[in-house]
Length: 104
View 1 (cartoon, one colour):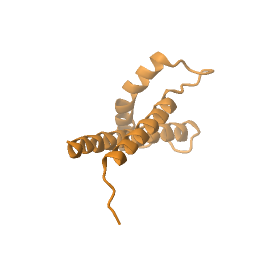
View 2 (cartoon, helix red, strand yellow):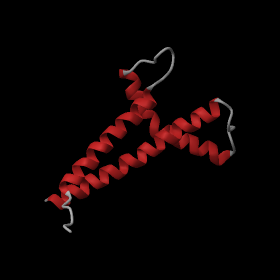
View 3 (cartoon, one colour):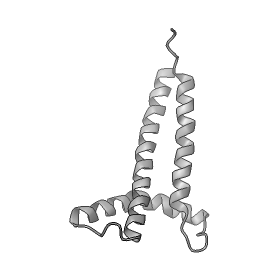
View 4 (cartoon, one colour):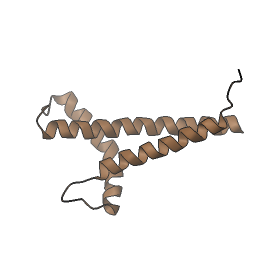
């Protein structure tokens, strides 16, 4: 039973880590384009941006319903990143409790 629960937690943690990386990349690219560090790029870059938007925007939209912009600044991506870090930390600690430590 513990092995199955640990495996499930490991899978959930992996998916959330991937989503965390996508959210961070989305924010980083937004700021890089905003300050004109990078341009709009070619077709492949635009497809990647569309993919990021398609993956992250539904969660941002749900957060925007609950959290209004601060001085016109949308903080939903940052709230998502902090929440993911918190959940990932809890999952890691839970997995560590379930995993027996090898004795010396």
